[in-house]
Length: 453
Image (cartoon, rainbow, N blue to C red; front, side, top):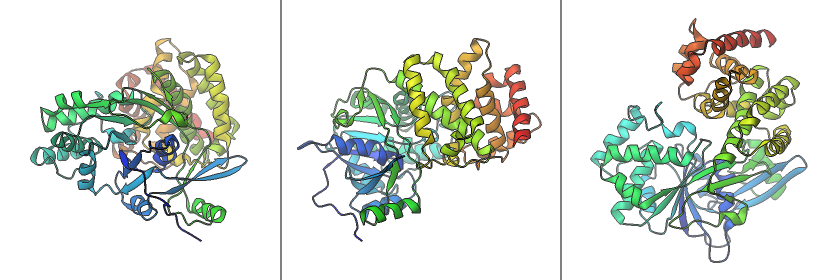
């Protein structure tokens, strides 16, 4: 038995990542590793969002980890070396030092939908306690340790401005429509609250790309670590398991340079929106449907849920509703859905419905509501969307997957009310609660779902 060790020095750090986790390592780090060529290697210094455990494990392996690509036919193993350094969130001085370095040209992020801390208006929620604390801390000391992701980015930009380190490109990698604009806005809002002169500097020195990311990456387990040891003879404390399929679409000006991600198969385009719609509505929307309806029916994984004829039929109904609204067109949607069924049905991926069900209050507004609103404007009420909303409400009451949501206390109280349906729908969007036909349909579907279990 051996441990992972680098046979040569790690690539020089030219990128920083916030949100060290499985998806980043299966996606952006993998693309960066594969994009490397002689004389053009980009090492990544990656920071955790909160806990230090993963950073410690990777630091003990020189940043290396095993990527297990899990196909129905078997597993493939490769060691990914793009993470030159792994850091815990608490290593704030190192975060500031790196972002003040002219060698660092790109900052990528995986924050999750909740990590942007947005208000209903779409901008930063400056009233959130975590945000208010960070704003006060940075006003008092630009090098102060902060906790929220937007504040960590702004602190890094303050350090970069002070060092006159040159231009930087932000590359958000979260499942949000127009994620570049979302990140740029929350950063600008926080920067303005901390230092009114900072937004102008950001506009002159910091570009923000927009991306669409796609690769199903379940949380690793002890069994996965045992699989790596048995297959490779290497004791890896931080392997990643993922599927064979992967896609990355990027748009934006990388004025300070970037890895040649297209060498690894990434798509560079002028407009991410058509790819974004397809991914968010079909894959992510389908995942949310399976998470709430499938777990309500006793299933634990995506593969189990899609093997259930009722869930599978509802999924295909949802896709049929989405298809006419997609910019890429019907033929592309049909091929994508065919591939999705194969991906979802792979029992070896073991993508937990409980993992997908997390933070539904942040996910459903971008995965479900855009299509539902288009349908309502045409005076149609799609049954699949009604069923997802009903299953989510029942989830908030304790049925199906456990509730892990940044708004859990608020939503749990709303779901317990006598008028729970309009109250919960209003938490997603006031227009939903004002739609009497939708409210009535969701109320009736809740009763149906409880009766079918």
